[in-house]
Image 1: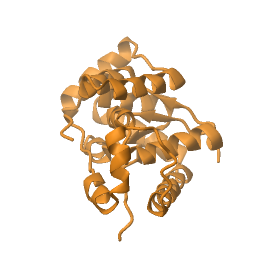
Image 2 (image 1 turned 45 degrees about the vertical axis):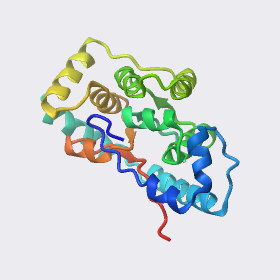
Image 3 (image 1 turned 180 degrees about the horizontal axis):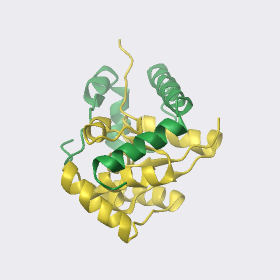
Length: 77
Length: 138
């Protein structure tokens, strides 16, 4: 995508190549969640599981410590 | 699941606005916040500015971004945060939007939801919720 300073590790082209039915959504830009092919449903379930796992892994104490370390790195603490 | 807030960085805003397959992971995260955890999504002002610049004249994407802003609002930066943004941007060679997202997350005690986890980690920022897609092998 070439966005400045944003490393987008995009795998979309390869995925869409394997699932041409998605091209319609990409071309139409429709906010269409009814595109429930088995592949898309499986993809969404896999993504949701990954998101839920990351939410469950949240550790407020570690998060706070990481935040302080970040501020210290830039002389802001 | 207890409520967890998240900050959306420039990459998340751009991908949300562009509304393609990459957006699925952000859709799922926002649904978790809306319907399950009750967490809030924070949109940093400078990240919004950067996203609008990246999207340029893509009216459809800009309208979608506007709807997201209408739902969650925008977090401004006070003078102290602005100073921090300048310092982090300069030292970390980052855009103001990314720096604002990081500082807002530290301030709010939450994580940055991002498609640019590598950029954030390279800048020493570990409070990341990684949205980059992991497509299943076939």
